[in-house]
Image (tube, rainbow, N blue to C red; front, side, top):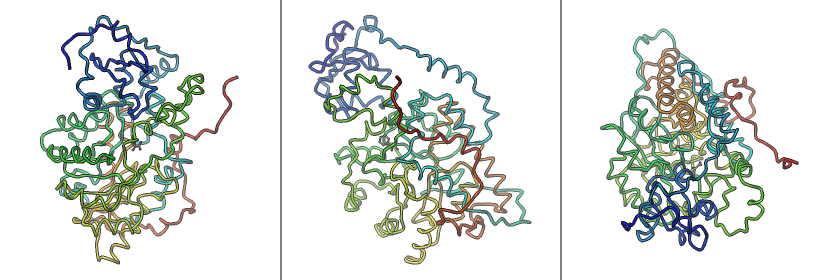
Length: 502
Ligand code: 173
């Protein structure tokens, strides 16, 4: 970075595809040559050519994204802040109304369960953020099935056991956790709250639960590790880059920084179609701009927030790559997104530490089965073929998707899971209430554990045995169960195409 201070006026002259400078956090960058390579497409950068792009940049990128992606000679120097023309931030009527709703949030003491966070988040989050987080693939059948599958499992509680003291703590990949639950990886946390994933780090520290840091966090990886409490356990979710050197760097850096488990995402060689998110983008774009888009962008921003930044993910990832991962790290390796016993068996035979039975929150293949349904077949088949019993220390099974209650977690544990991942509910908690929201969400789950452990007659997780649940209908997708009123209230109907305003 040269020391020269650059005037806002000079920056403003570089406002085209031919010469494009932008300001981020008070520094000027020449991104002209980077335009065609920007994972989010060139168009969005050009919108800020010659201007301050910080407000648009922040929610989507970790703070160090620009410095690591641009060669040093393109870092032009600090801008003379007083001379920068302010990018006019127009507060729309819609935004005003949203802020009013934010001021009308109920006190946290009135939030009684995880569904409540979702209901409030839906009302107070920026629309773009809600569209991105809540959306799922295609017709969102799997998204809803993830939750509904838990309705097909019923309890067989035991009575007259002294349940004065109950303990639901456990170990996950050898690490202590106060609950059989971890905070799963979800991208772009700053879309929902300015502190992004840091809200999760702090609340996880307070409650002694493990946070899985996403590859595509809005906070930088180091920021999330630096802000962890002494001894706090974190895992890393990994999207594998086409450039394996980049992946190697990420993995080895994570290990050096004390990350205790590597969760490689294997269900997203291409991102699913999240149509709520896509539709939101159409509405946000100026129609004239949309129609004049001449395919000059590598990535069409109208595809929604996730697709725009996912072009680095390698669809060529293969079982053949696993020995390489084992050669570059000693961290336990877990595959996240396994969806049938055959693949779980290969993972076991390859000596991996476990698998997450997951369909990516219903965001990838629609009509993929729920994690909890897959768990039942994996436990049965690996028992039959390899003599394994679950939960198993050496090969751990995790599930995620649709979990909203401690009873859901208890069902998974009874069926053989070491722990479950919870993603969206914590994003909703911090989007609506910041750190305190996540703190409250974890407190609610703790309260639910205490009561439900007593009610099923288990004093610790070992006493939660398969006989305590009746899951014989789990593979039946057409059994009638009562509707879930709280969940259904939050579930937002998908929209059908409609005419433009005339
Ligand atoms: O589900 C997602 O949205 C996701 O995993 C993702 C992938 C790439 C970029 C951003 C998010």
